[in-house]
Image (cartoon, rainbow, N blue to C red; front, top):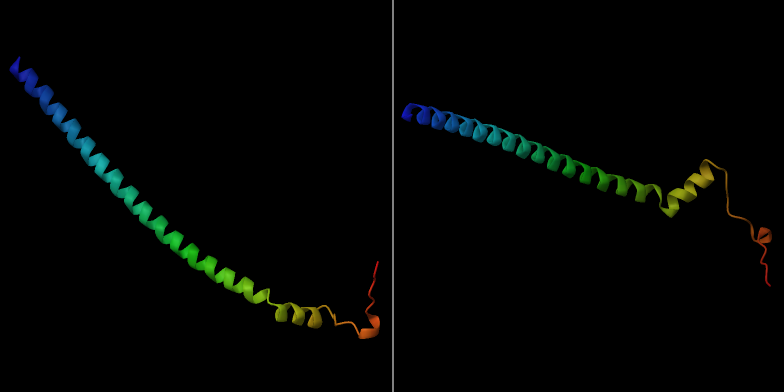
Length: 87
């Protein structure tokens, strides 16, 4: 009877030890994955800042006016081409 109890306790301790090892391994993997995702988040934040800067550069009034003149051949109207409509 005592031998059977010892055997059951040894099996319970082994199962518990394996569960602890498995849980620790899974926790380390999750921490590692979390740190990778945080690094990716920081890289994306840097890229977002760069894209906002680039967008503000491309959208400046001077840049839009330059593209309108150079690529689209647009120009400001002469005073005699401007009409004012009043109701």
